[in-house]
Amino acid sequence: MKAIVFLGGGRITSALLSGLRLAGDKREIVVYDRHAEKLRTLRRESRVETARDLKSAVARAEMLIAAVRPASVREMLDEVAACGAAPPELCISLAAGIPLHKLRASLARSRLGRSIHWARAMPSPVCRIGRGLTPVSFDRSVTRAERIRVRRLFEQVGLVLEIPDRQMDTITATHSPSHGYHALATLAKAAERAGLNRATAMTAAAHALGESIAYWRASGVSLDDLLHEAATPGGIAAATMSAMDAAGYPRAVEKGIRAGIKRARRNARL
Image 1 (cartoon, rainbow, N blue to C red):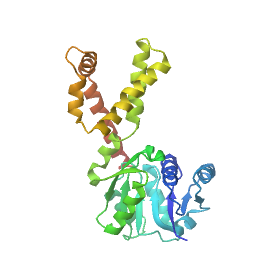
Image 2 (cartoon, rainbow, N blue to C red):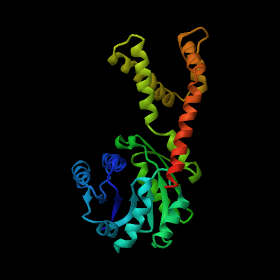
Image 3 (cartoon, rainbow, N blue to C red):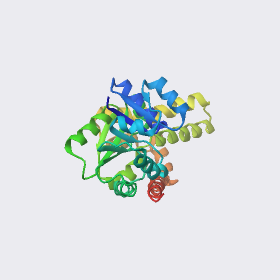
Image 4 (cartoon, rainbow, N blue to C red):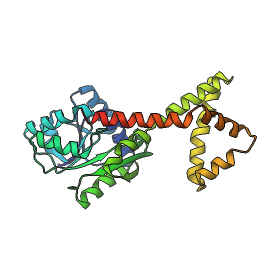
């Protein structure tokens, strides 16, 4: 029986599988990874099958998802070419920073030919609870029916945004939940230093970030209007935001995004 096959059993595979099962996806899913412990964990947590070798995994695939590190993409394609099993036409790369033209070039070098239709996807780890965001890009060879298949897969675990491949590095650096974790930790630590205990500081910081964004989503009020409403002249919020901006907060965020984009582009040269 044909299945969705993951090559790589790391964190993003684990998050996606959890989200898919939570959404009620009961399709056959097979995972191949060199590390037996990862496979045992995935089998126990997400009720998936595990492949004993690469050839048997590839032979089962109706859709192949390459969930390996960027530095391992070329090696993975070489191994697929050498395993003796023909991969399916539709393959999805989850390797951050590797653009579609690099996937095509690696494909040609691996002697697999040019029959594979590549899509790229960068699912947020929050897809584990069905609240993910997955930007997707498609190579020109991907058919309309294949695009629908890819979108429907990721729509089970959250919002899907179809974007040009050239924008993938920027959205990868932007939509990571690490921004929320980092902001939460930073805000809570500042509150602790100002006198709150850790538990109270974490509760207050989590409310400031999480509930404010939830309200913005639910209210339909524009972000500009909410900022204007919050920044009452002479008020505490206005003073706080003004001091943060003067200290370089906008510039720090911009530098962070640009560093993430630079790292992604460096991945493409590996």
